[in-house]
Image 1 (cartoon, helix red, strand yellow):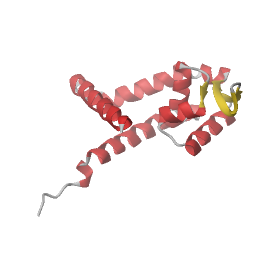
Image 2 (image 1 turned 90 degrees about the vertical axis):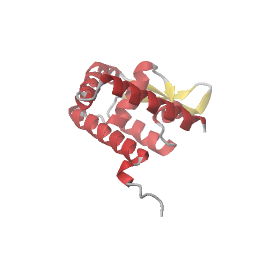
Image 3 (image 1 turned 180 degrees about the horizontal axis):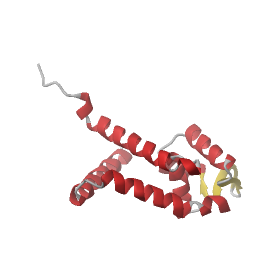
Image 4 (image 1 turned 120 degrees about the horizontal axis):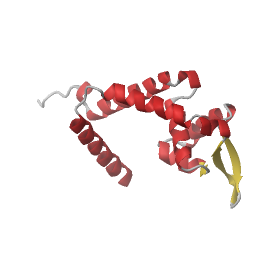
Length: 145
């Protein structure tokens, strides 16, 4: 019989667990701003390029249409973003930051940076750089399929 594989050593389990735990910690650390890690990802994308379509944001966040709609609905309720009809296709909505959404950029970026620094504090810089490089290559391969 073949060698037994421990599920907890599976790459997909390890990556998934690390991703969820980091997202949960970021959300916890941003709780006073009532912004989750998933919402932060949407805001961060808009901080880089304001005025994006929902589909572009869904692709960036790797979310389906229903999930991205829910995230944007919650950001809109918090008055952090607004939806506007796309002038070239009224069926599409373009998402823009509000002044309040823009005002959170510096503070939320500090929280994410601090959280990431705390989580990676005891990890060798070269190992961390190598791990990121490997994960980016995996993402590229998965997106190419």
